Length: 322
Image 1 (tube, one colour):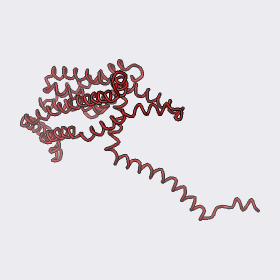
Image 2 (cartoon, one colour):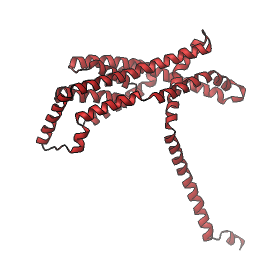
Image 3 (cartoon, helix red, strand yellow):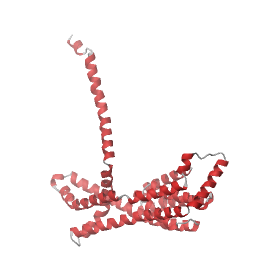
Image 4 (cartoon, helix red, strand yellow):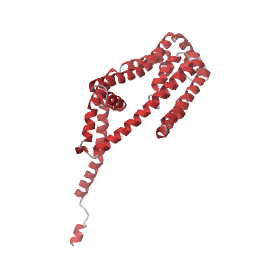
């Protein structure tokens, strides 16, 4: 009798309590995930500079450590920060100058572009492809000029991001020595040494990748300048500067560095032949440098990553073209 009482089915109230507890356990992770995503979204203005500053610290810390062996700590910090600012200004100025030259060209050639645009619209409508009013406004010459100027304005409006990144980098470089000492202490063992070794390994790979990426960006800029100049595309220097700066951005950067000159070729000549030559040529340049030069410079450790990145970029470019 006692065993039958123990095996007696639960009452309706007990079943309801169990169901409510299981539902609470299922809802809690979902609610937690939503709250975390919301917190990340609203804190993006702080988290984005923080993440970028960690990347910069991984690149700049060996320079400061080398300088500290010869000069004082504050002088080494100041020299390192000046070098970081110089690099960011050079890369940012390249793309700002290139887009500025493009905006001026569009402004001074607005009438010719309007005629080319009208001819293309008439040709499309003659073949049964109607351009509705919203698309006319979106792809009009005035819209392209406004889009280019808005891009330049946004690039010039990153002062807050730059200031926050600079502050985080300065604080991080100041605390790097203290963090190493704390991780070396006996109280932090064995996790401290493990974290230091992992950090050193990640930092070495990041620095190696950035050196290879910088060489590839410079080579890409030079080859793009030679190709656009030989193809008869105007603003060859601007396209070279834009390609140099955008190639630091994985996936999206090479795509934009290919699409923009292709659209510009249509605007300049009004023919699809030059646009096709520019598109195929720039894709061949990106593929050759990304699939052969970068893996050759990087070595076996990052060869697969570089080849995968470039292949995905090329496929995305072709997809976006069609």
